[in-house]
Length: 106
Image (cartoon, rainbow, N blue to C red):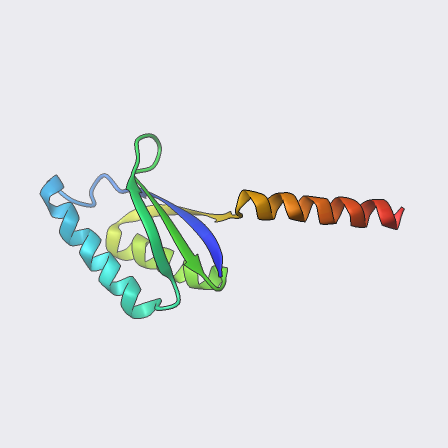
């Protein structure tokens, strides 16, 4: 399983009153659970700045996450950006392997 970060910016017309947001979030969540059972939600955060929501998910492949993002866009009335997240230690191990392979190939 790989880890992905989904950044969501809600459309200005996604809801008329903030009290509507919990129901929209439930609708999106229920649809993703039904249509994307291979995507596991790890954490969700409300964030300040260019985006409104940051979700951390695990999935076997990017296609699974893309489907979940399309549901967020359609039902949540937002735009999404998806990032692959690699644990730092794993990233450093990969750098070492690539550096060794590159040096050995010369």
